[in-house]
Image (cartoon, rainbow, N blue to C red; front, side, top):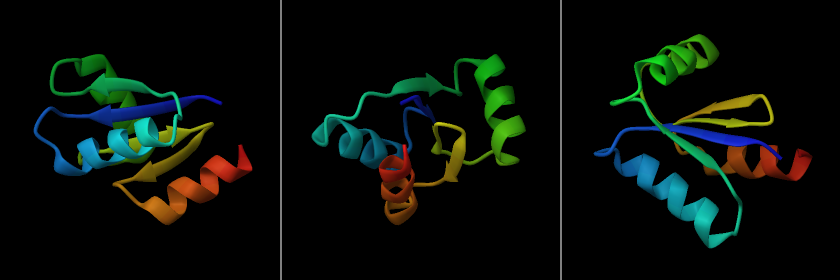
Length: 77
């Protein structure tokens, strides 16, 4: 399962998403789009959004900390 989270250091919902994955022992890769412009561009291409978090679970892009969508995507993976 491939999970990427596009975040910024000050984003409260990014922290909630990362805490959720850590608590549930779900590995993920975090990209700080405030520091990495290539990943910021990638995030915008995937989501069409500038806001974070953007979560990519096996190609399913979820905007924001939308727990029902995250859980659906995890159970399909």
